[in-house]
Image (spheres, rainbow, N blue to C red):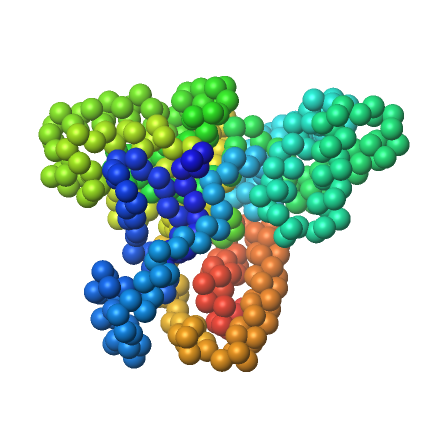
Length: 427
């Protein structure tokens, strides 16, 4: 199997699972508490069954066992997408100390890249190939016209068609204009040494608090990218959408050599991983925890040590499939100043679930399902309005200003509490 992770559903669990060869022969599944989304009783899960009985769900033996025999795969691990700047990213980076000269350089680099895209056939082919791969992974969720145009341009670029051909020339110009509009209106400037990566917890416990490891295709990735990462001391990570200045996290990168040494030291000191409190509970005596990092295709592995995970610091993220903007650009990392993450455990961030959210799926009528679907569309619209309002507030008053924090808090709560009334005073 060419994949090392996937996002999907297994019975009452939903989230992301990562392959670890140290689990041994056969199929073994290890889940986190956060992955339990639905209470589905199973013969081997006594706690599930008891909890369901308390909630009034009486099940006969093996009622839902079949659901645990099937894996519903939403997506496999995929080639990491190129990371770019955005309006929100620029706002938070500026707030954290990045000067205007850095952004000017990004704008100049973006303009040069557009010129290469228009004039250099190889640069064009590289870009449309990445778009084509992304288009295939998204399937038909895109606009059908965009899918057709991208596919046609990709085929033309692959056969190295003459640029004087009218249709080909028009498609190239449309692509360049589209990219230029994205830069001008949304701040989507290309940034070197930057990727979109899924967040993965370090169950081996080799990483210390505040540390991370970047995998970008170690088995088949470009050696130049891997060498760049190995030379970098720090990386910036931020989940989208970000709401507060502290949602941008600076992590200390650990390279493969250091991980090998730590793994060897643990073997020497502990003798048995199974008896060690610092390692995964399913490690065997002769297991080498470094194997997990060496086998991993792609992802940002974050330390699971400490009172609060770095994923949660990024606007309340988790390890159940969330992606983050990750940048190991040395110049940018040096400019970014440290800043405490927003504390989301305070009373204003604690909201009781609405009545509609507490209703069990098995007891919902067809009318209620339809109402839920309609409300979901309304909810998405509200999130868009809040995001636009937050951008304006950050521009006018600044990131983490009292005005921005009020709107950011409401936007943060709306994501997980769709039925909460969002109240923002006019003043």
